[in-house]
Amino acid sequence: AASPILYDRSAGVWPGVWCAVMASSPTGVIAMLGPSGAVGQFTWIARDGRPLDTVGEPTRQLGVELSPDGQHVATLRSEEIWTMSLARPVATRVTRGGSNRQPIWSPDGAHILSLFQGRGIGTFDLVTTSLATGDVETVRQLADGVKPFGWTRDGSLAWLEYGNTTRPVATIWTRPTNGQPVPVLRDGDAETPRVSPDGRWIAYASDRSGRF
Image (cartoon, rainbow, N blue to C red; front, side, top):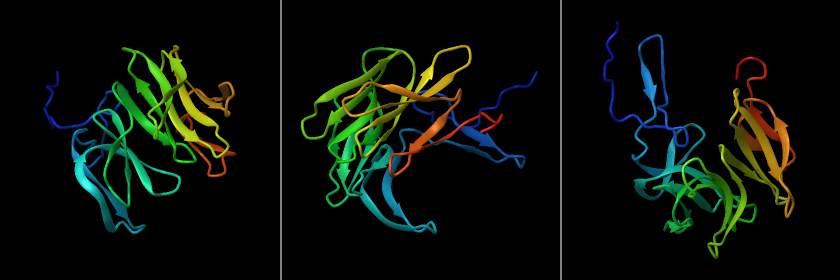
């Protein structure tokens, strides 16, 4: 039997599924996700890959979501959502407690839609948080995975739900302003959905053809 070889102790894991992310090539090169606690800095990059400018100070943070007006960013620090003005890069904490992920800006930049896990193991809440008051509205509470991905100009929320069945089913849902959640697409393995700028279309990856 083959013996395992320790390659690296610093590999990061993907939040939510808690597994290492890596790939290998026929030449023997291995690429992997770095430590989740690594220090990073927001950096503007030109289309040709050149760094143009930096924003704020280097710190431990994960991900970046640019506001609709292009003047603010949202990010994760220690499982909390923070926002920062690009003109005055001082971070402001949005959420208070629990595990928070995947921040999505409202069209007017006044609220954040996110995944909240604070009621215990195996709980997934879709919530909106007011940046002005900190008030939280619970949109949906689930026992399976959920991933917010859009907030359209007309106020509709969009998210992906993962059903816990023998074959995982990912369903795209929307909720109109002051309306009820409605499933709009069930595609077995829909992934990485995005809403078009005009809010009329949703693009997503699927294995309907037999491969992604």
